[in-house]
Image (cartoon, rainbow, N blue to C red; front, side, top):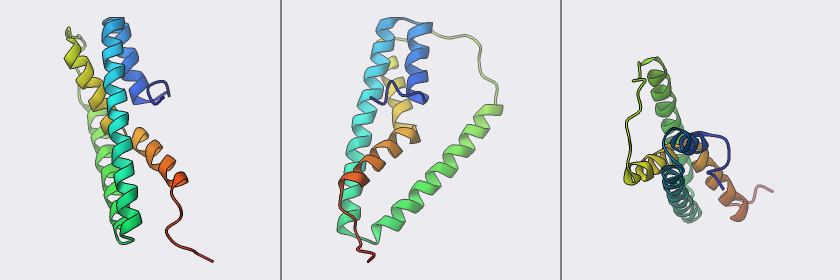
Length: 128
């Protein structure tokens, strides 16, 4: 599902398919699907930890904010650094790894699974 939503995963799979081959595009899509499965397990473990320890929630939010700050700085830095214009040939394992790394560092996938689990779990506090 996350492979077809416009974003970094979609761009990586499209890039592999259009510049290399359909088979390498499928390997890249398999890598992003594996990363999404990892995000689902991470979100489930995080939701379980927050449900068991209410103090863990603010720490998790702080870690997420720091992650986004570092990720944003890296994106800004990379946008100004030069990149090579040529594309090297890749094998199927490199395509899978590329898809997995794109999916696992993408905050879009993490937010998707975290928000999905917050709708499933009961609220931690009764605010009434």
